[in-house]
Length: 128
Length: 273
Image 1 (cartoon, chains in turn orange, green):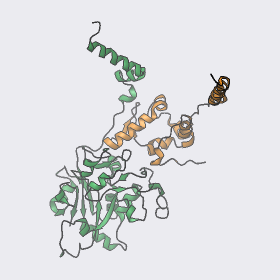
Image 2 (image 1 turned 60 degrees about the horizontal axis):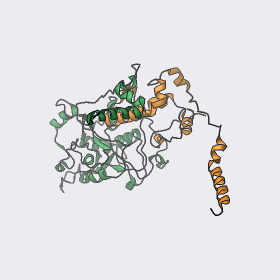
Image 3 (image 1 turned 90 degrees about the horizontal axis):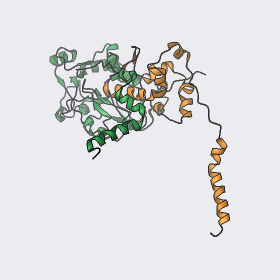
Image 4 (image 1 turned 135 degrees about the vertical axis):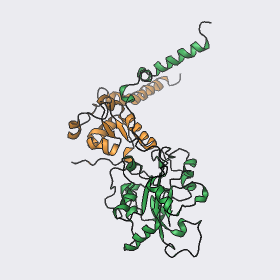
């Protein structure tokens, strides 16, 4: 092999550069953010579905809501505890969860998802 | 032969099901409580919504007002966050005015009564019984609700191809050339005004949806409510399928015309002349 030493050294340096971000960030995992509830949400105690379900699958519920409202004209939802809710992101969901940055944004940033809800729906105004 | 074809497919199917994710498979066989409780409660069923517009009453009211009466249009545009760009080429039309001759081109009569000549007529989507816009939509973003005949728009699904605009013979559909949220501020200072109704994004088609969100709550469409509020009572909303409904009563008592009825789209907006 011609210039074998140079090639191997070059490969090692290249590999080192390639892996440097992993070494740089090793052991520094970002902490998962905890969504903050507004006083109103705390007072309500129960959401439209159990908390564990909402945490894992709120997007499934929202997608199902938007589908059944727009396509089937079914505008009301009965929660597992028997309560009736008007299916609406803007009025029902955001009435309680009006703290957009602490409730939606920080988690969405953490898991790097970018839902396009606010292209059309009106984002809650936060009081500072 | 140890395993025959049928046996193999069974095993492969089960293996794939469980292989995909234990939870998904469990959900298929034993749906959770949450999924089972997702029933909707439809409020409008077994009806055919229609509107009767009394042009005589409308014109009478317009003659009384200095700038003409625009109560129905204002109410509709406020309720649905309809943007006003100030440019007629980019106008978003849910409910609008057009001269009698242009509204009813199939009724040419140069000697028409002075009361109708060049007079503005209130126009909106006709919610046709046989809507051509629905037939041409490639994504089914526009669809007719079978339970009450309203021609709806699913703005989540519209790709903005504008086939429906080409198909609609009434020009009742509009394309959002700009972001509705960025419509000029001086024209609508408090825009968005209604938090109950989302805006649209740029590049989707929209139109009058007969206030489906209000009907679901048992309210009248915004234009009808506004017209009744100023005591003009020129617009009547009701169920065409019910022979005793308010609209059928009006249709029995008065001579009515429809826009371009010869095209066979069966408009559900009737005009008393």
